Length: 194
Image (cartoon, rainbow, N blue to C red; front, side, top):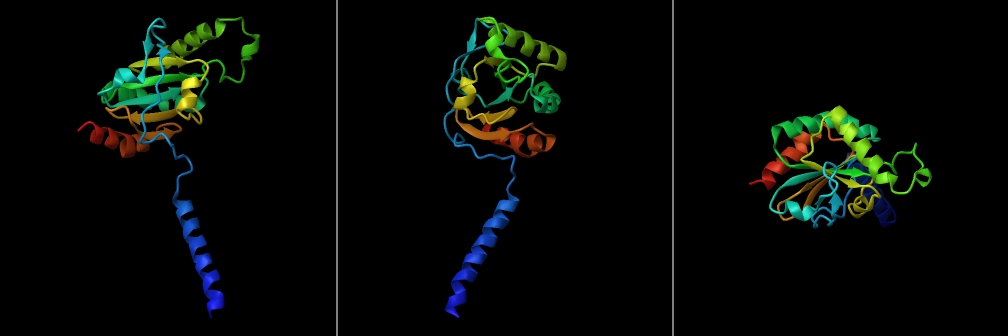
């Protein structure tokens, strides 16, 4: 009888693990940064390139960091929702424009004249926001993607909920949907704003 007991237990454990795995959302990638301080950066503002922004500037505020790019098709999907969110003035929304030129597969940056990448990034990102609406309190340029690497950006869009102490409380990978906004992000923002 004991001869079959251990394989039966092993099979039951395997079934339990598979059941747990089937309930997981493949779009929800775990982030080792959740519960940890937002990585620091100091990047030029899109609207005022001579000025910079740092997450330190937001200490004491609950805010969202949204990683976006004009070449990102999924960013277009979530953008109207971000514009509506901005109209409610619920939370400061900071944009991290990620690899505006380098991320576009149609542009070979090695063929660009030296120093032209930043100018092209500003023109492309500003033009895109002018056409589609600008939901951001401000947006910064992560031209080479260094800040994105520090944040573990897997792909755009991604959104981080950051609390008053500068701790990342949530990371959402992929476009924000109405369900994600109302079911996860807004309740967390409400809790963090108490």
